[in-house]
Length: 53
Ligand SMILES: [Zn+2]
Image 1 (tube, rainbow, N blue to C red):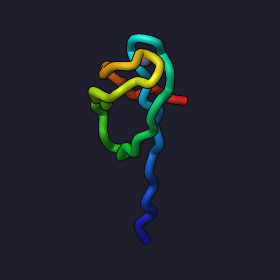
Image 2 (cartoon, protein in one colour):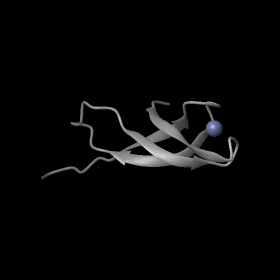
Image 3 (cartoon, rainbow, N blue to C red):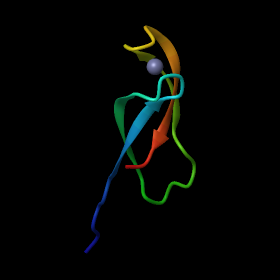
């Protein structure tokens, strides 16, 4: 029986530290997610990094 667990991570703007997005991550994945997303606070595209709760 395989249990599928998805880890939900916050994607935090590296500029203003706001958690604007949520992403799914495999628990086995060691690398941190980093995406360029639009931040409504900064009003521009910024780098969003994965942040644990
Ligand atoms: Zn921001």
